Image (cartoon, rainbow over all chains, first blue to last red; front, side):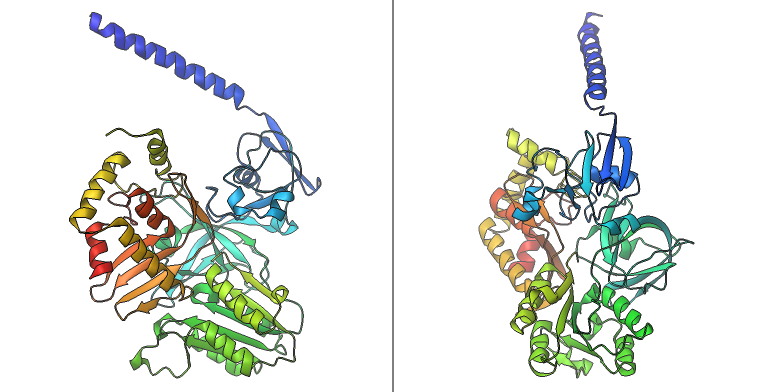
Length: 370
Length: 150
């Protein structure tokens, strides 16, 4: 029986150590009740400390935009902390510029709430809510883009055309935790009981793979929103809009919203880039809008049109087509504004073309979370 | 095989949910050192050089970026689509931060595809790590050879 003594002793010591660690953890990491004061005390939340600022706020129904679900890899969940929470962490620094560092902008997923804390957030975020929606329809609008309509089941969403929501993707297959991804709403603000999103399959993408392979009509899905500040200005300036692929979403919302509200005296040029005819979505709808609205011009350009397609529209990269129209067709005497939706690379390239054609950078608006 | 503390930390960082939801190890439970030794052999067997493959992938990534999010045909042989989402990812070996850029490289004649990111090129070039078997971003040597060099 002597051979059992050593394992028993080890097991007892391990048990004692585990209990000690558990007790110490409860004492050391018990921060008790703390207060989060928002926007100079406009709202004060009392909660138990110890969690990240992002999840602490979410537990109280205040949602800071985040595209990675709090892993510190998107840099989206920025907010200003006006009380002392220590120096910036190495995990935050790559996402912040000098001005943001000086203003103590922080990644809310990286800041742990250990004591009372004061923060500043945009007032719009008080309007953000989590909605349990049900998938009403799923339709292929191209070979790799799905139009998904969500019924908000009696809830309403109030937003300006151009805003986005976060789609909450549940764990599936090897993906153990839930994930969030941002998608611009393609539905109109007047359709308050529904949200429509355009979801393009991204190679290796967690959310888009789920949406394209596992999402079914009738499934319940959480949406969080509205977020963002992308919207049309209230000027009379000519709108020069550029998008490709699912970047169509905010423009579909904005254009139909303008048309239905009778804002048709404003000149709008909408440049849409795709590779082939099979990559163009809503072509008929946009052409119909073009025919009904004198001052709206829809210009689709294909970079590699199929020979057999009979495509007679513009060809080439969308930036080259944009440049040609800015130089030859769009009235330079009138004020012009740029509106862009796409990847950082696409936005950078379009910014270069717009500024080279005398549209100043402060008159260019974009959402680059794509 | 013995792992250095830096490698042990890298292996922890590669688990699902630490840096990316699905992790870097695929279906494997081996130490990354063992995986790297095995895959150096696989690369050699396929006649591939890590630096040469990395340079080739970077070339495709740069060419693909010119499509501004739309696919681009290269030399009538490959179709490349580069997606450039917001955000950055740290290397699991903690020696750099990389854009979340993803490229899908398709050899048009066979339809075979490779998925590659800025980070996976760095892992290949600097650490000789091509991700575990079962990872959708694994740069399987034989597939790399067929898609990139045929």
